[in-house]
View (cartoon, protein in one colour):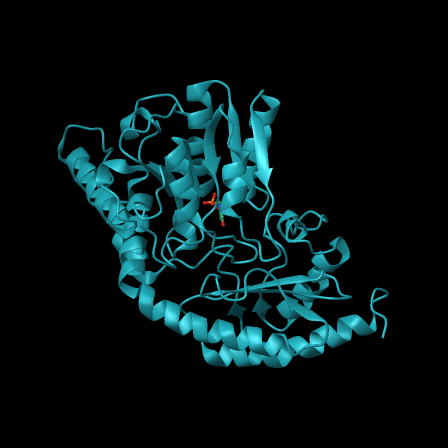
Length: 382
Ligand SMILES: *Cc1c(COP(=O)(O)O)cnc(C)c1O
């Protein structure tokens, strides 16, 4: 038996998505730029897909740029604005995904100024702190919609209002929230929003960037001028069709899935917190419906993941990227958790295929593993 509880890292591709993609590999394989019927077929699929992605976030289809990933969408949004202005100040948070954080770090090396807004103990970015950081030369605010490691949903609507009021462009990384909770680019007052296909039951290596009409970006890829000149590359039609199908399915199932996932999530949170010296990370209620995250004092997250894996359960510690390094997660540290505690973190992210039986099995196995690890831990004293 194998149980997958790591949906914030990636999701299985929905069977309907696979089905929708198939004919675009062999039968309708045309290059969307070609003038013949093969090209027209591909072009048509591309434009229909654009409409479906736009619909999920209440955008217009001409505001959607297809990219090669969530990471690329983040890079295009941030570098695209930075390169257009050539200089200036960027505001972001201290808990962003590396795709945003490392892009900002890179721009700092290139002469841009960056302010990293701190978060509170729940990982929430305070809108008034964002406002206080605004300067005359601020060109962009980039704050994520929902955090991948701790599940906290950020007050993006309010931050968007502040950005508008000051006439500053606002980007949000919504890779974790799109398809899971309502995302409406108009209500959120965003100018740019990043999406990744593989976090919502679509294929890997496909993303999208919403760019509000009138917002001008410098491209980061130059070539044939695809995607309104913003992303040259022959379009990945099959992948894009997959992303669009995944968006369509997410839209139809969102409420039902969220209710199911919340129920399982709340059971996990309730039961796990019964374990001695266990703590919830992220916001207790204002969090993604499928996301539960904790730390356990006196144990190593890596060992916990390995023992859970031996029992057939796939979960994660910190983020998938930071768990390869032995550094404590920058997100957990930003919420004020001590480094030695941050090492004992566990993230359980559920998906639509998970069942209550799987959750019950996990809840039976976990306390014994934690106990076992503490018995051999030099960090754990009774
Ligand atoms: C996964 C993730 C990304 C990166 O998306 P990829 O498509 O894997 O490049 C960016 N931001 C957040 C919040 C993510 O969870």
